[in-house]
Length: 391
Ligand SMILES: Nc1ncnc2c1ncn2[C@@H]1O[C@H](COP(=O)(O)OP(=O)(O)OP(=O)(O)O)[C@@H](O)[C@H]1O
Ligand SMILES: [Mg+2]
Image (tube, rainbow, N blue to C red; front, top):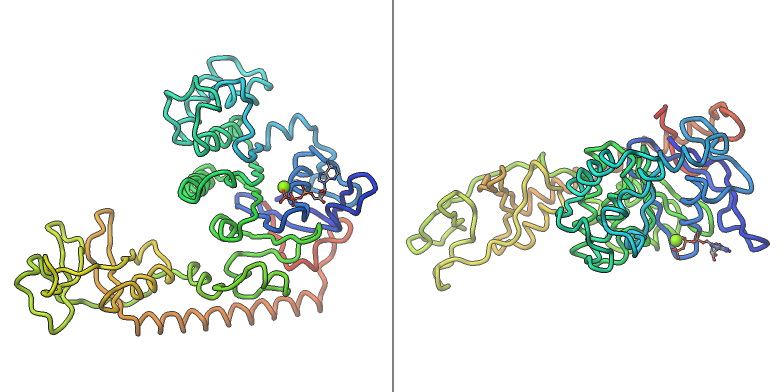
């Protein structure tokens, strides 16, 4: 766990870039700091690996003040990734990835093995190893940047707007890659972005920053449900209720059956009939008026892995108002859910949210009535973050 306690950082005599910032960054989770340009995100991140030192306040890592830890140790235990990878243009991909292991004087066989391993992990073809950064696509450069950040197997990965230079499709791929790596490697990730959707997608904790301080931090579902200030509400924008459905699992939905056929030409149309292919996968709904006898399926959802948001979209995009559920790696037909059933599930989800809200409010009241004993100096009590027991 990394803990900021009342940290302030000024550059020269300007107004502080970071001002009385308190935040708890839990270990083995992804924390995303999001906020408008110039609010102090990069300054905050650079204090974590001591590229910058605070003027006041303290940063602790697993309870130890950062300024008692050597910068070399920090460089080994904290990887750093920036936009476009921040790659050295005159070094090959392999040499870029090997940057920190070289600084740590690993022998060349160990370095070569590690480079190969990282290229595989970040899904970079081996053939790219001898290319220079300018000979790569933006997405590939970013993968090299991630590989380089992970090279010495650090505990913490710091990422400053890592995906802002690539298009939305490549960006989504990189987001999936890093989320997968986080789960697989169990790193503590601190990531900065301008993009709230990215923050919500990537973060176990989202910290919203304004004018050098954190205005709200918590799980994304909680922030969407209960923005703490007008600024947060405006920053999140519209659709927050709908986006919140992305955090509710579709697993509890009741599946019902519809008639199915593998030969649409022969089906009657009193009731909706689902067309399946030879392997049992849904392909569309029967409509004898159309050539081929089949109309569009709409989107489908997998109850085991998808959210209520995806299920609702499947119902809304279905020409017959039924969300088609699929299951297993082959995505075979598993049943349908009507819009009415989905709306009932949405209402239940609302009730659950209201309950969590009430619990949080009660928790806050207890916290005010019995203030926790400060460990050393004043702790982060007023930023809405519940400190983790330990890391
Ligand atoms: N080296 C520096 N010298 C003086 N002022 C600086 C320096 N670096 C940043 N600042 C100022 O500190 C404030 C915060 O900058 P910072 O880079 O932390 O913002 P940011 O949130 O990362 O912004 P962006 O989203 O645009 O990257 C800004 O007002 C900036 O001008
Ligand atoms: Mg920045």
